[in-house]
Image (cartoon, rainbow, N blue to C red):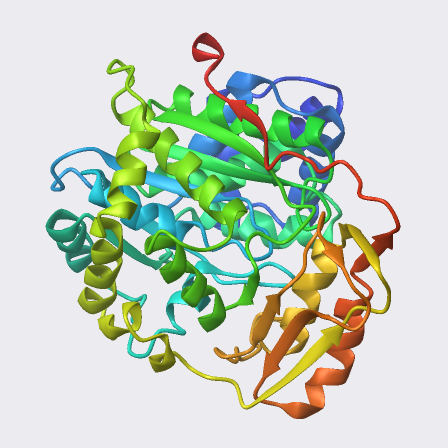
Length: 438
């Protein structure tokens, strides 16, 4: 088998066999195929696409390029939840404790933030003492004991994807739906859960800018999951405004605690409850019950908050944060963003909001940048809300006063005002299931 022939085959619109895809990935990971030839193959895939079976085989080739986590020692239903990345997206820290309180086992490997999107690990590491690095044995034991653990992804999980992604990033082949779907799902499949629920973001703060593309990506990923024997579903959700009122790390943890105390912003509550209900539905599809009822009960009873505190303590953090948020890192400096006029906020550039937060120190513009745990933004007014000239739209926080001015200007550019209220968009734009379960 020659890579030259496989490049030509895909260039001409052919379909690869499972054997051919395994050869391509294995030979690239081992160094037998140079970057320039894989770049040509990626561009051929970008233009010609992949069929449903081909995309599944491609994903499985990425999975077997590295280690796979064996969760068989954990009793019960093992679940995972993944978001394609957004601004203010702290849903994993809420959904995990909720479903654990409902009896499911959430074994999650997460990533760090880069650019305008925040990372789950960065939020957790804002909790004093919290460790996201556990041995596989301790990870499995913790999930078995308390129903939840969230750790960093190991380097040996889908190394083929890691190597391919770095090349896609510099060859203008990132935004290919089969390649995106394979990249995301290879890591989810390798992580070993029985059930996967996906939150596919759509809008100005997301990678997918329109609903049609987001639904296509969601369906492709659901088909991959189901094809690999995992019960999978997806929600396509709006990212034309930040999720919740807080953007950052420690500041987002405070909002997590709010929701787990049955408080907090309505949009964040709605999405977290919906994602939790989808996991419960996939775990017990025959019951036909109101899957939202146990979700609401887990929160109202305090069981979900207790699960969160147990996870924090088990991973070395201070569980007292659930009762005293002042234990979390506090910023040294703050500045208000003032409304320049009366009117309605018709739109927010969510990406600009995320960049402003990163400029304050809450995110990374480069992978080796250091995070300021206390930096971030609290939004007092968001899309669809009425404002009066002179009132505070937001408060910016940082430990470096020199960062405030530029970040404030960036955040100011995110707001668009109108004299009349415009129709608001739904938070959940689509629900995507396996084709025979739609």
